[in-house]
Image 1 (cartoon, rainbow, N blue to C red):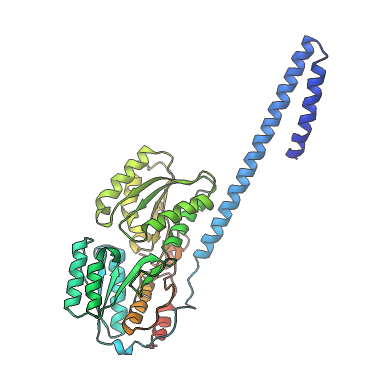
Image 2 (cartoon, one colour; image 1 turned 60 degrees about the vertical axis):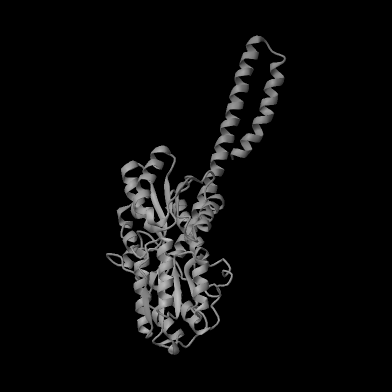
Length: 402
């Protein structure tokens, strides 16, 4: 209907102008008023039509985001875990793990899970107590080589920064396997034939899409927290930016990007978030690339913007973070199951120890956790809950232990 009114307005305006040329001053005044009224009506109609188009477009974008989120809330399948292997010959061997920081809960949970799985298979598993510093990583390598480890796994440290240590391990006949460092879309690192991948970029996309859904058509003005010293950081930030550019309402963008390295999270993040929120009242979403960052970001939001509707959307599935979801600020976690991650990590490690072919694109699944399904992870949340109970038996069968 509005389009037809706009088509009529133009000839009406031409007729008014023609009559104005033949009339008196009074008629000129009347015709001028009519012209102004017609122009104003046309402008209002155009503005309303544009607003309707923008609203319809935003609604469609939110609906598309919601469809992706709803699918991501489902329990993942165990239908394709890789080719079967027999790990019975590995009994009694030792795996050394070097986490990026042995004090961080996500890594603690993962290390405990890997140790339990290895023990079930009769394999020793040692976690080196690293503190996030390069020196501690180097010390971990030295100890593993001295103790005659059968494999060294890097649970966070970047292999690019440890080339001499990796060479020493390889020279000693010890394979080095990066765990949970690279996105599943990336190629294998040169000289490292085995790697357990992770869906980092998809996790960042899901967290961002949840903010799109949550803000219901409002442009997302995001404060993003990254950790550039970790391998996935750059790709995850790019994924967030790409999602805002292509799958979010017009005007959505990263307005502030804060970088904090892992050892500094507990001291840097809260004051940095507070300062950013005070400096920019536009910010309406906080997206930490790792959910452990949220433990320090949320107090910053509470201090600086308690009266603003700012949600936190992240990735990982740390139990302590998922426990915050009912509180309201932590809205969603594109969650990994550290226990399932542990199975993927050890499946890749066992294949390296056996010299068996690697599983292409081996990676753990994600499940989107929010207020609607967080109870499935336990009260309080527990590692391994909320992802079904089929995967442990599926991996045991895959390894010949079932």
